[in-house]
Length: 235
Ligand code: ATP
View (tube, rainbow, N blue to C red):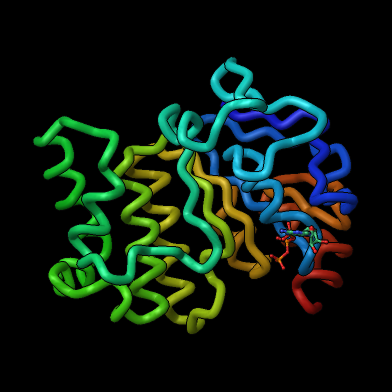
């Protein structure tokens, strides 16, 4: 469904991605793990056109999207939940969700999706008239994921969904990510420092170091891999 082929991305002279090859099949949950500064967020931002690749190709459903603008990429069905959530703090929860649906005009479908996300995260239904900025960090993450779902994405890109959240909330969010994948058949690509949860949730995973992919395998095999256990699981 989504293919990155020999992707090189730069910030000025900094060579952040040094020839990334990565594939996400339809219906999969893929996790990309790695240390701080490895290039995980850059991989997501390059995929959605925010930091364009200097070399290489990105193919989505057979189409070359390497040079497409971020809004064209969203319209094609790739939606990112950025690191740090970035919800609209002065809009209510319901208005934030409405913003997620701004490209749609199927009223009935939108209403059903409101019901679906309120059912996934009942706390958002309780808080629907509250300003987004007054929510807790965990609730903002739930809102950011829900807002992305309102665009009915084919691929959901999640950048560090666990960042700054209490372990119990992180577990809840990861179990709902799996539920979204199973119920909505949404393909999900997670970038995460919490390697343990990210690999448990994933069909397959990629390990990134210094701008390159060093290991790829099933989530299960990566959790059992000695190098991964030592470097990322603290064992
Ligand atoms: P983290 O988990 O800390 O977010 P990461 O694996 O997502 O790390 P990136 O944020 O993709 O890593 O960073 C990859 C490299 O690119 C790092 O060396 C980083 O310092 C550099 N970098 C990232 N953003 C910028 C920027 N806007 N300008 C210059 N260099 C950047």
